[in-house]
Amino acid sequence: MKKELYFLTLIFILASCSTEKKLITEFETILGAENAEDLALFIQTFEREVLASNYTSGNLSQKYQEFTNNCFIEGAYNALPIQGESLNRFRDTQMWNEIFAQIDSTWIGEYDGLNARVIYNSEIGIQEIGTIGRSTRDISSLDSLRTAALQWQIWNHRGKYMKAFEKIKDKNAFIKEYYEVKTTLGELSSHLFCDMILRHKPDFNNYFIKRIIVIELARIYVN
Image (cartoon, rainbow, N blue to C red):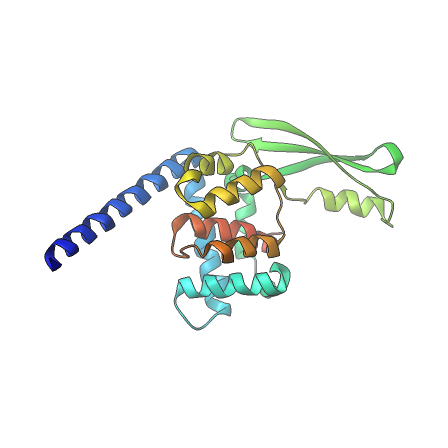
């Protein structure tokens, strides 16, 4: 009986590993090899320079858990000290453009509101996504706002990152909710995002969970 149970358990583990490997392959195929490699490097840099240097106890999974708890309580901006330049290298990759759209021009429109053109810097050229606006009623310096707007990070619904998650979203309840919320809202506060994590209690060793957490919470350290 024990041998049969062991055999069935082994089959289940092997099947789960095979499924996970297939999902990762599908995900990285959509991203492209170079993009997938750049994203993996960003994850590794975050784990080494942010998690390992700020959380000294527990394994890597526990460090992710503690970081998430801190972000839920304090907000991502206050959860960790400002980091160095290593994470900023990610902004120069094409993978960054697959996750975030860019602002390439701004102008003052009707009622003195700021308008900005949003673009997707795709691998085959610039694609215009549309425009966004912001009231300037309480802004003292329009020039400063226009300069700052060029650095805004706008969620890129057209990029390969969201297309890759669309392919595998139904395989995990947390990933499915995350995909649906991001598709609808685009931006999430760190408090709401971490509340989602705490409700689902995902596996912090999971390939996809790591990427979701780091992109949502570590991107604030990228200038």
